[in-house]
Length: 324
Image (cartoon, rainbow, N blue to C red; front, side, top):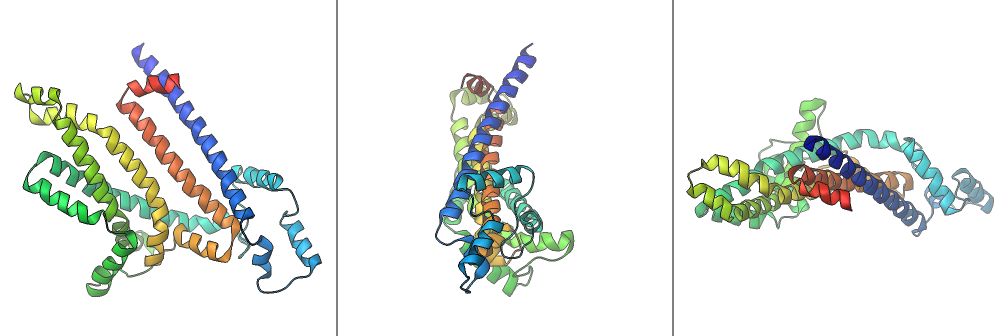
């Protein structure tokens, strides 16, 4: 019965979080659509460029693009299209937006995944070492993270290109190769540029969370009673330190999607970051809308997964999710 009750609470919490996710995405889609079309400049100007069209030509284009309809009607048409997988057509190339995003989205997802693997390996490793080895190891880790956390991604990109691409010639300075191996090799330096600051941040969060648990009275009592250190660390320290670490990982993952815009430009990586900058410069409204919605969705989904992870770790949060 207890297991069934726990599953029911998790199901309610999941529905609650999915409802919040849907509302957030709906409100974000309204803001994204409205802000782009209410900004200075109009879609017709993108199509005509430097030419001065006649009033009839401008009206014909407005009818073709449905710009003569009220803004709420245009939003509804766009939203229903998005829900059916139709993101519209690029105003610059005429291609479906989904096809323009296709390859670039895959590259960006691979880049974010590589970066977060590095963050988890080095961030958790350094933070754990600093917490369990006070003294020289803790001091060295704190000094390293203090420097790393202040390095912006564009500075890290410049340094990595200068050292590992230009001087040592270990990796390409720009672009990615063909095939899985070539793509991973081309994305490794950009992933490192994204990971440097995130590693330092996660290491600090991990170190502080573990140190706080190590100083708890029940942990000290368990160690004094002679329980094996690894058992105490597993059952009392690491488990109770997971919530802040999980929150940090979710925030870093969602933030990495936005940071790719800078790093992909520095390394000329053909992902959605570079596509976004190009589309903004060209005022390609449908592409910018689609990318903005994807970035918001990534942020919201990461936070929702973090909440569910907290509920799995701490059963008290399931009851909180039921009562809200």
